[in-house]
Amino acid sequence: MEQTPTTRFPPLTLGELVGIAGELQTLVGAQLQECLQTSSELGLGFYHDRRIQWLWFDLDPRRPLVLKLDTPPKLKKLTKPLSLFIRSNFVGRRLKALTVRIESGRVLVLEFHRSSEEPSEGEMNLEIRLLPHGQNVIAKFLDKGISDSKPKDLPSAPIEMREDEERRTLDDVTQAWLALKSARSQPTQTKKDAPEKVWARAIEKKEAALVRMREELEIKASGAEREAGEWLKANGTLEVPQQWKELVDTDKSIAWNIQELFRLAKDKERKIEGTRARIELVESELAKLRNDGPIAHQAAPAPEKSLLERADAKGRRFKLAGDIDVYIGKSAGDNLALLRRAQPFDYWLHLRDMPGSHAILRRTRGRVVTDGELVQAAKWVVEQSLKKNELQLKGERYDVLIVECRFVKPIRGDKLGRVNYTNDRVLSIRF
Image 1 (cartoon, helix red, strand yellow):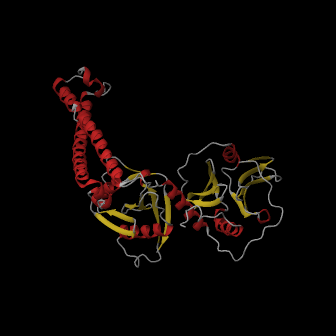
Image 2 (cartoon, one colour):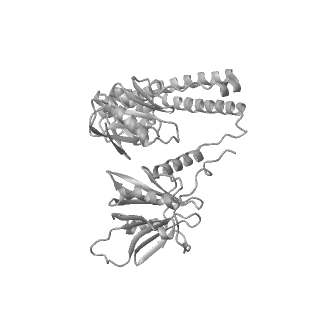
Image 3 (tube, one colour):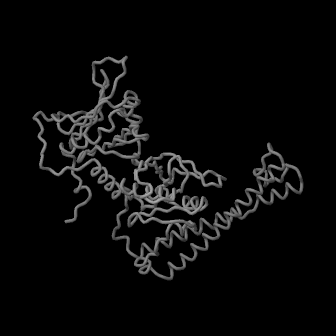
């Protein structure tokens, strides 16, 4: 029988937790910046290595886990007493120690530094219990304390670690957890998804898109801005007819209003041409769908165009994996065209604090890009930006920015192709 992701994903063993705690020692000394909580997960954001790294706890009763993430998952965040307590008492403090309380079983303890004015008595730690059906988070701050749920009694007998077991690393657990999340978020195909229904839904989507675009075209084609601008030129007064009053700013000069109205008119006319082109494309796709029929539509999907083709841009392409490509534009205009046609969850890469090429790492939705794959992509970007090969760069170190495309915005009017970005990750690579 084929196993599901859940059955292939057992809870952590004590030996695995001890090993993972050893890997997490790099966070000791890091400052806690944020605490996020959902219905069954808790995230602690530590500032380490010039970025926030997330120590994430999945408190699923069947398999509570500890993970290390670059960005928190897109989940509904909640304000709960535990997260409020942690923010009030622990955020801003540095991690003093991270240990496993072996005598209690799978219990991870995070101890924090206290200031010189605070008493030396009393605990100042977070106790995360990762026992199946006994999962819990207990926060203790001097004489105060709070827990996520009512604590259960811990095992009284000593716990033994099996030395012969095959143990997963922190990266193994994190990647498996992310893959499980991705698999759960993907829609499952049912018997209802017969070729006829898939074909019918595709036609409905195309028809609905045509209705929306034709409505947009009708609104854009009104030409009110150009008519109002021409009227101002001819009459030289801001007392325009009633239908144009909303288009005119009476606090500004006539010259400013004329210039702004013609600018808006040109912008709208460009959009009209784009909308007409999209309408023609969708109309041709709809006609082909109807002519091909459901079986042909199901059996022979059209090959996906490369990002360069979609953006009508010139540049280079690096095949990183079967489902991952990296693109670099030939010019600033090509780079911006690639960025505008990228998917929100694609990655934008650029040398940090240095001039160079923008790159887009294109991936399928839910595809987790490993650190090894990101390093390969970053090295290629450095080579293309500096026009040197790996041998010429041997021994040198560079920082590469990695940002999801939804957090990258082109600077309006900038001919050099510069952008503003947030939520960046810095990847340091050495050749």
